[in-house]
Each structure stands twice: as structure tokens, then as C-alpha cells.
Image (cartoon, rainbow, N blue to C red; front, side, top):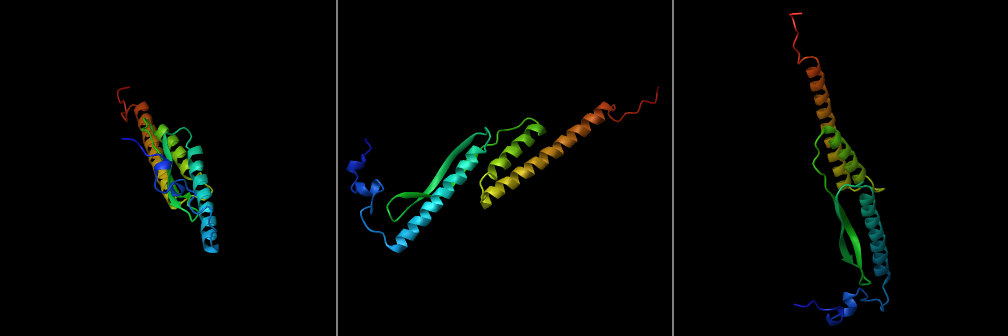
Length: 154
């Protein structure tokens, strides 16, 4: 099965995004276009910030949701970057991972509600890691003190 080229698409000017390029836009369409262009820039900047701040964590994306403007071109109106948290073997690793996730979530100048949710999840992960680290330290102290055993045969 062959994939049709743009020249074989019934309306190639629409497929190429140049639909309406030769037409004059109304003032309402010009306003819509300006808003879409602004939104596209903001969405792309936000997702680039997430990618830049991922600090070596495995990511997928950015992925965008598009809307066709009155000029026939596609503009990003939403986006996401999936950051995967690898399993950690210790509370210390979990703490570092949580810090990286929180930084990546809050990287944009104006974090979204989803960004803030992820940052809160990362903060909870950090709190759990600190509690686990404290428990581990208490256990080590307990073990170093002979496990709570008092030798009365000295």
C-alpha cells in the first residue's frame, strides 16, 4: 500500500497549511490568529522548559495537540512531556529523583495545574523518602547499640 503524496490529496493547499493564505482575513480571524500564535509560542516554551529541566530523566515528548487557525496552519494549543521515574534502590536515590521531578514540573515560568499536581506528587515522594531515610538511620543506630540488648553479665 502506498501513501499518497500531497500532490494526490484532493485539496493540497489545505493539506500544506496554505489554505486561505491568498484570502484576506477578517478582523475577528486576525484576532483569532494572533491568539493562536501566542498560545502556540507559550505551549512550546512550556514544554521546552520541562524537557530542559528533566536533568537526564527518561522522557517522552514533547507531544502537542493542534488546532487549525483561520490561515489553515496548525498551532499547538496544548502539550505534554512524560517524564518517567525509574525505580530507586534507596531513600537517597528516591530523594534525588523526587527533587528532579519537582524541578522539571515547575520549570515553566507559569506552571499549569497539572504541573503543580506533579510537583506536589514529587514533594510527597520526597517526604516519604526522608521518612524512610530516618527510619533506616534509626535502625542503624539501634543495631549499632546492640539491638537494644543490655548485657548484664559484664
